[in-house]
Image (tube, rainbow, N blue to C red; front, side, top):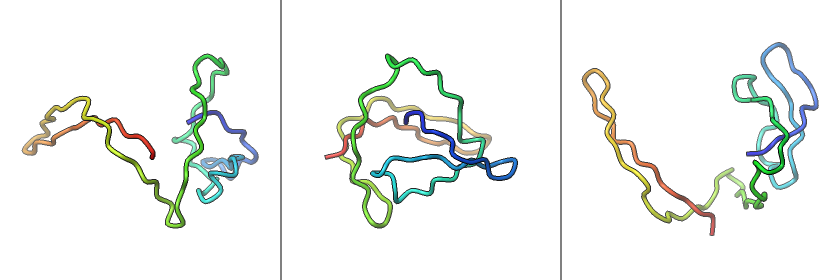
Length: 89
């Protein structure tokens, strides 16, 4: 998404982040495996678009188009992989 300030380290494997108000309904504690160190070059970041998060912590998104489709083979199973472009209304 974008860089957020780490406000507190919780044990060895979790960090508490300072999230903006529009993300207030999302838990602000994350496992260390979900975080990456940010490289602070402003040209890499897209303008932040506020999201409308509903009470049940879901987003309403609309399908724009299918970008790619492929099939992945796992031992005895085949999984259809579809890359989709979504937009919030």
